[in-house]
Image (tube, helix red, strand yellow):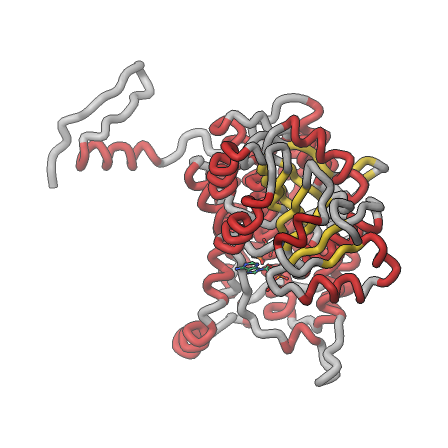
Length: 475
Ligand SMILES: NC(=O)C1=CN([C@@H]2O[C@H](COP(=O)(O)OP(=O)(O)OC[C@H]3O[C@@H](n4cnc5c(N)ncnc54)[C@H](OP(=O)(O)O)[C@@H]3O)[C@@H](O)[C@H]2O)C=CC1
Ligand SMILES: O=C(CO)[C@H](O)[C@H](O)COP(=O)(O)O
């Protein structure tokens, strides 16, 4: 191709970048320049997709990449978070001009996004932090896209992004959510919820495996059944698929051959850090991140199991009959509501703290298709926000009745798991949060007394206004 003909360029031809570039070419009908640190990959992406070859422009240097782009240019970065983004920005920015748009479409710590936008502003190039969810298949066929940055730039990006986004009831799952780092912040919380959801599903799997003794295929069937009701979601669906998969090497269930050490690339941790900074108790997200950390200490866990013993199956009172499964299903529904309430509470606080005015109902709508946490349940969240102000999802009328109906099951499941020594950190974090949240008279009056005793930190009284310090007896 001669120069300046590509509608946009994607820099980063890994799993997500290549898929997104193909999506732009296929569903958007755009001509897409392909760039990558390892430049030969760009030709591979074109050669592996002959049906789209006319609209794919492989390039072998940054200069070549930029020279193929129509002006004003649009460059989509899709590389690993952190230094790779800064490195690629440093390479490409000197070749861009005022009015061009540079998008970081990978996962990013929103603090980095805010810093990068500020740093780029004086050049006249528009920097946009944009969260993309849906994994490889979503990026290729239709992801959910969370856009931040300047709202005026969004108007320019809309015609590029709407055709490639997932569609729910015909409307694209992409929107501008707020300025500077808002898009990446929302994606980070999406991932925090994803972690909690996955962990809670894994905990129920642990109960069915270790306390009930079910085989993977039996559990796959249970998850498939749950996927027809309140729990209908992509994560429940893929749990069933993973459990049903056979291992070509051993002929057994593949899941039984997978090492129980979870990886993590940072988004879950960022979500928890931000929730803590904002004073939100996102305890199910925290439990999920911690559980991945503990899972990676496999040798230590084996030693602890040798010393302390494992699951006390004799004390496990779980059953896979109709009643037992209904109880687990209801417990998972209750815990899921609480996890989403925590994620949404974090979004609500961030919106106030950073003055973003996040469209909370709209966020649930654009998560409805394309993304990893897509589920029927998100419709209820959208409706709750459409119905009026929501202080916390647990207080929204449509959710209070659901949690009322399901909390008893969560309580029984957590109690029985605890007695049997089956770890359910996210389920129990959900229950503890619920119980703490619904208790009008808490216990931090004692904490405040302690703080005032040792540090003169003062306290408030129930019976009159003001700030008080007491002369406590010293220990
Ligand atoms: N995989 C997923 O399900 C999802 C991933 N994401 C996010 O998308 C981004 C890309 O992820 P993914 O495609 O999965 O990752 P991959 O590992 O498949 O690809 C990584 C890409 O980053 C490039 N890269 C890595 N380090 C550097 C560096 N130092 N300098 C320049 N380029 C570098 C690689 O280039 P090279 O080929 O030369 O190594 C490659 O193009 C990440 O931010 C990820 O968190 C977001 C949603 C879903
Ligand atoms: O953003 C994603 C999904 O929404 C990515 O798949 C991300 O890598 C998931 O996080 P982790 O690798 O930490 O499990």
